[in-house]
Amino acid sequence: MNFALTEEQAMVKDMVTKFAENEIKPIAAELDKTHRHPEEICRKLGEMGIMGVAVPTEYGGAGMDTVTYVHCMIAISKACASTGVIVSVNNSLYGFPIKTYGTEEQKQEWLSPVASGKCEGCYALTEANAGSDAASLACRADLKGDKYILNGVKRFITNGNVARYCVLAATTDPAKAYKGVINLIVDLKNTPGFSVGKIEEKMGILASGTAELVFEDAEVSAKQLLGKEGQGFRQMLSGLDAGRIGIGSQAVGIGKAALEDALNYAKERVQFGKPIATFQAIQFKLADMATELDAAELLLLRAAWMEDHHMDYEKESAMAKMYGSDVAMKAAIEGVQIFGGYGYCKEYPAERHMRDAKICQIYEGTNEIQRVVIARKLLGQR
Image (cartoon, rainbow, N blue to C red):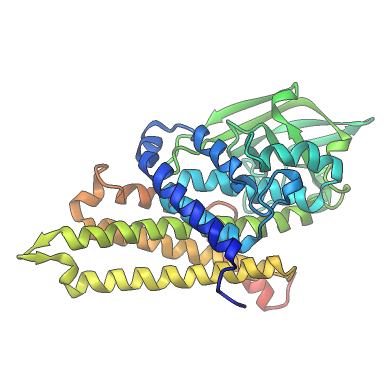
């Protein structure tokens, strides 16, 4: 594996980094305070191809690779974690399954608008009783003629309040467990029987809406089925593998923001007649933060490289997401500690980084589930 970026990768990374620093970071605190969806930022990122980094250009994306995606996600999430997860869902949870399993017609109709950034997508998996146990879906999809009739409620859906399109995980028969899972592409704006339910009040990533999706006898054409019946659970798992690279990258971006802010503050904050950066206790915190975040980034790049080379990267993406989110949370906590009392106040961004980092240990598979995945792979279990 060569860590040197190609000329094209370096160009995209530089472009996105400058955009994030100049246009996203200055409004991040306002987005957090007002809970406002960054509509204008998403449209601009779409024009740059970043809402579909690894989607071929014929479907509206940038036609790049997953390694480039990791660098873009870190840069965006370092500026604003909420914007980062919106980009991640568009690319991974929504874009990946359609790009991978969709027909040509499905890609043209339902991937292109999202990958080009004209609108947002989402992935509806979680339910009240189906989180880590993803096979225990209750949302029903009953085939009647050439239509599926949908009934059920999805919970904690990122982008759910703003998304135009959705990849929906449902079951044709709960008694079949994972064998009954299917994925359907749903046009949320043109599906009678669909409504947005509760919008969650959250700890962090406040500019990213998290919503209930409610389906009551909603009709979806059978042509909107991804692949065939019986393939949905495997599609789900592969999509989550891809998604974990996105969330791990989001976490590392947050951690890098926490480190950068803490480092700058430590150089300026004077106690006992000298900057606190001269104290070994602070230096050790900064050194550990930097080392662990670099290690996490390397894990992400390995997983991304393996995906790009069509290798089995399930264990590696789980490691990258787990470790990346754990060290990001640690960095955010240490950042608050370095800021001292100011770290606990909204005047500085340290408390926002801490609130934003926590969710990365939970969504797209809790870190406990990541450890289960890693252990199963190590033991040769399925």
